[in-house]
Image 1 (cartoon, rainbow, N blue to C red):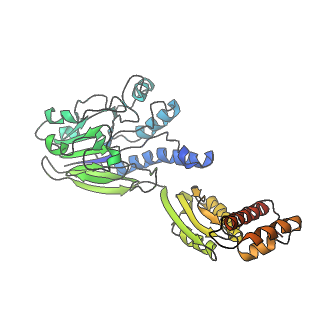
Image 2: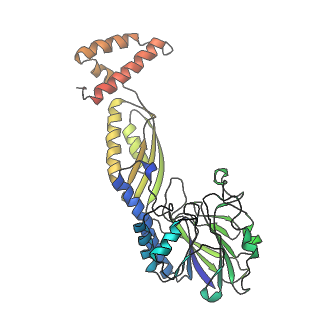
Image 3: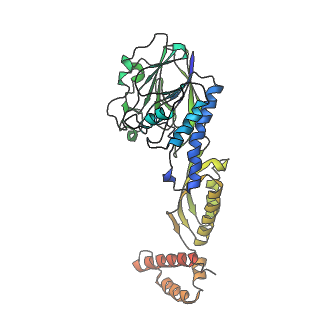
Length: 377
């Protein structure tokens, strides 16, 4: 029997600019991707695996700095188990690639850079890994086409290692480049096909799995895991165990608010983010119509929540200000502003009347301006 760990899509050096968070917050997410490599190594030791297979996109891009390369190599150097690193579409093995630079820096003997399609024999010859490295970002031929022609010992289990989209098995948006036949496991006489590129953990075809990214990097992903795979012999179905290793949890929330009680409604939505809050990355869309007084309390609530989580990306553009009669009455007590308010309120009437619509919008805008300037008494 052989046992190996299947992982992929580390994308070390990912910047997370799309989150729009302060740089110090994003630095923790970047460090988290390096930390998970160390946890993977420790898991491999604890589970006595024969090899660690990384199915592409080890690095976010070929231009990552040398310090990051040295950090990754240092983490792998501590775990004396074969690490098999496959070039993916983010770090293809073309000219002046990250893989050339690693060669110059110095790669530990037990870390294998899979530049070629030559099978790698491990576990005393009982495990044959067939790599399909990408040499450019977008490849229009199936990188695994040659698996069926690769000759290995009949006593060895055959494991394909590739990076791309499995044809007919993923969402249409995923099927663009680096397409892989969805019958490759059968056509290539494989006991297991270890894939990278799709960031969720998923079995997509017989004996064919995506491990997903071990540290989540987007919302609505089923990620944060690696796979422990056991093969008892050629032709025997694999046993696959999913093991969670990620430390950050990504939440996608939507809150529909309505006054009165909008603040309590928001708190109920935020309460769905489970502990520990410090490891939560939250995208929040807030919609509805609330009074201006509650809107100020909502902003305060969001500011406090942002201070308790790792990252909060809040979208409140669809939260419509709707001042109450009390709000407008208070506004109308303020000196010269009261004359403007009285004139606009006199124009309010039929909801279909353009003058009435304009007057209501002007009152709301005037109220917003006064609140922002601290003019409300």
